[in-house]
Length: 621
Image (cartoon, rainbow, N blue to C red; front, side):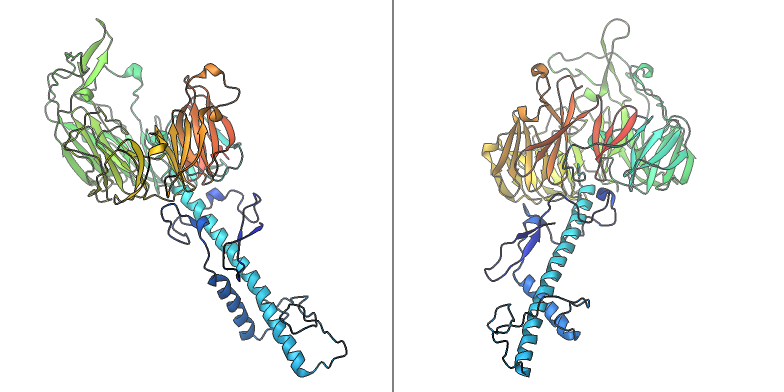
């Protein structure tokens, strides 16, 4: 790895290691080195500052030199030896005592007395110490660089959308066929799939089968929604699966929800090694079950007398598209129980709330044309991204894993998401969630919440939620404020605004010291520390050169980052032509692009880039 001169005082010469694209001593698959925790960094990142921006204290080199010089003297080493006892050649040139490195003798016939020999030895010791000091400093820099690289990879593994370095278009590393769509979970170093009646874990590095456990028919593991949003990537020590999962294909679903909804027959809990920790029957009287966070089950149940209006035809307001009058439905009980023991962790009772009625309506075209029916039993619960959600007719609630309610009960349209730094964002509009009707009470605004659910800050505009991060600058909040993009700190302090950047559709990534915005005309990158524009890429540069001109607008469907690039998922209007396009975070150059299969969904799992489709899981790298 080559060296580059660092900024320092004129009498100091310090260097940094520069990546030349060739690995000196790295793991064959560094993304899966799980030995370095993400907090093993060398300094705390500040806004827009990362380890690569550090400037060394000039005293660092001096300390290194002094340390070696003292070490030489303390161990009684000869000046021509380094601290490890290896001979240092070429230091005794026999010369002038003029401060130069040449120790040659001006007068070959001069008296080589004890004073002259002592002076020469002193000079040799100083030069030897200096050379060894340089070696130690450079070795230390290499160690620091390696440690920082490992810490960065560890941070990428846990960051949303973080993937291993991809300097060129990735190839297929491995592929597993015959998987059940969407039934994914994650343990350390492996992705867990369902194949026929078995739960199977595949090594992320090689795709090799780690273990296989027979489960039974109609098995489902993990969240049915999580992988679609990259939120199923958090590892767990337990894999929670439902056996005898109800068949809810459209052809077999009644026009309205059943008052006795089908419930999975059993819950199967596996350890990270595939060992069966528990297999127990589920009682339908306890409600519908869904895998929850931290080895739990979410149970949801309607209580009280079934309304006579359930399934009745409704009169719709043609202006608003919602029912003119919504019948009152039943209350709901939500319970989080331990998946192994069935022991209750927490319980909440949720009274029926009139939220405008759109969750209480279903449409049927059976019989005499299309009709609007009262679906008062509509209800489901799930756990996605560390948040438990309950949604249905007359109910919308969001909870932290410990049972803390995170939404505002008086604002049924709101939605909650967990932010990468462990805090939460409550969006009063619900635009980012499944439960949005756009109605926002004037006295109920959006807020960021501390992990305990307390309000930390009420932003003056809706937050942008970046799809990908390199694990730095997690405390920067990006929002739409007074018609422009602005950045604030986690506690609300203003950092910058960018009036010339326009209003983006999304923030794709915060990585490499840049904020990458997706706009209708392409991508724009702003400096995360100042808001100044770094570069812009027009949409035409993101397109496949072979794509026909009539392909229409190019949608950005997802994004990832390896810390050096933003890797954007693109899709044409038909949804069939999908690509991944890598853009250099430093200058906006399009570095590579690769095709994705039809109906394929890419996601980041512990730094690995997986592509999931209807019957397979593939790793790219």
